[in-house]
Amino acid sequence: MRRVVLDCPAKINLFLELPGLRPDGYHEIVTVMVPIDLCDTIEIAPSRRFSLEVEGAALEGKNTVEKAYEAVARRRKIPGVRARLVKRIPAGSGLGGGSSDAASMIEALDGLFGLGLDREEAGAAVGSDVNFFFARGPALCTGRGEIVHPLPGRRRLHFALLFPPFANPTREIYAIHRKKGLTRGAKPVTGFLNAYASGSGDALERALFNRLEAAASGLRPALRTWMTRLGPGARMTGSGSAVYRLVPDRAAAEALGARAASSTWGAP
Image (cartoon, rainbow, N blue to C red; front, side, top):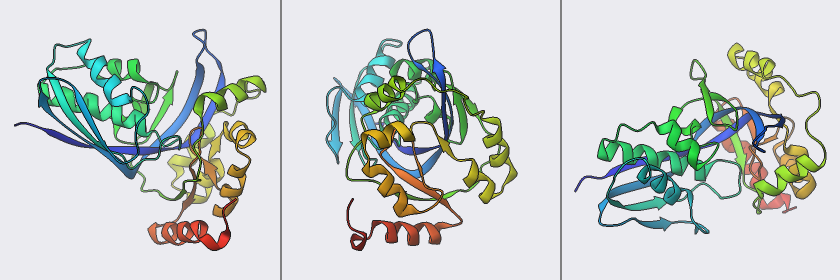
């Protein structure tokens, strides 16, 4: 029986600004994201009906894999599939696991059944970040996040990544950001893009930015403590709760991650 197996990579936001509200009520987003090695894995095969088996953390409610299947089924006549999802990306971490799972589901269905889909159109119907994961590389994303501009070149970046023992509720964090007033004096992305293109690690670290950090740390004060564990230059990805720091190489990432996660530091 034919089947498709795909990795579903997590992402990190290197730059995230919210210039204002759109007429449709969504936030205008300007973000630069990169995929990272941490991945979920999805496997699908034809079946009489749709079913989903999840290995790892349980998924609440109607998950993005099922939503992706339904989005494709509204656009093309397809049979059921038996899907198996191995979850490694923590939920509520700002690492985009749900969006990545949805993108891989759309890609898998398109490839398995030869549908000739407009994947981006289907992905935008599932979620704002889904289309980024079709690019499989660094990209500037605008609009609601669904408009993807791939960046030239593939810099090899290394990060130390920490998962605090709590998830961040994305909707609440955006609501706090709105309540405190929309962004004034929005930071332009051009400075970040110049630093990214320069190849300088120091310049890139100085240019890292996330507008949601203030709202997230207001809701989760312990977030600042976890960022302090990683030292100067630590940033939050997405709406959190995962935090990261850019480092020179894999050895430095492993050493910093081990030290920051050490129980001798004490949980905040």
